[in-house]
Image 1 (cartoon, rainbow, N blue to C red):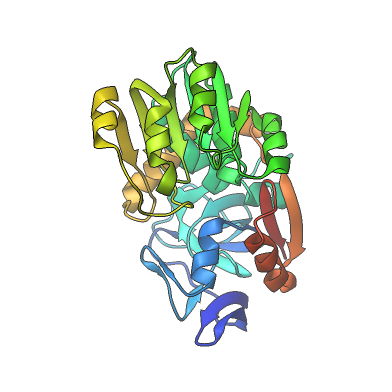
Image 2 (image 1 turned 60 degrees about the horizontal axis):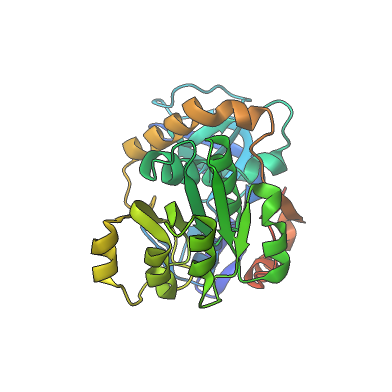
Length: 322
């Protein structure tokens, strides 16, 4: 089968053997793959948790049909339309744990489905389970123009947030954040952006920040969070290190929580999928929760798709199609 593999000379489409599902794994005939920023690091040869390096089949998100079942895979049958996450998604066939799959609604295309799994599970966990957002509260998403960021704002609105703010350093993308629920769009490269948040919240700050930027924004995030507010560190696009005002953190009594899928057990991941599905799945089926697809590339043009994503000018998701 064809797969996008990181080899000794870099990443390229390569012919490899079709995987065989073992244990609790399900084999998927892939029809579409969602691209994610984390893929770019592995395409460049970096390690992402336990994944990456020579021989790695790249890609983390896909949609297709069930083509095979391991002996311990529960809840699925051959031919089911599914979307899911797991390693090796940039391939004609992929395997993943049965608990990392979701059914594709009848009205949804594979391209749409391939864009959703990571955004839904990551941000339901960050906004609702970890972030504890309640109706009437306020939230800021740092790095809001990515697929996961756009989904975070939609989930917040669905759960009854009073004020949803989103950040982007790009003027054009910032202007479009309202399409996915933003009441306020800020430029996080502006040194005074926190003042906008304070003005919009009567000087108190937001109840919750979903931070995908980190780095140099850390202290501004603290300043923009209310007393007893929460900051959930989801991503580090702005850097993994930065100055941190411990006194302000303590004075505001902010809960600062880091999350990642990389260190979670399969049991934890299954629980995240199950909680999301039990809570917000009707909104997915109805199309209320969805992501804009910026561009669809044929799988054979994956090199061009990587260049397009690396330029960081897209809004929403980039999808590969077989």
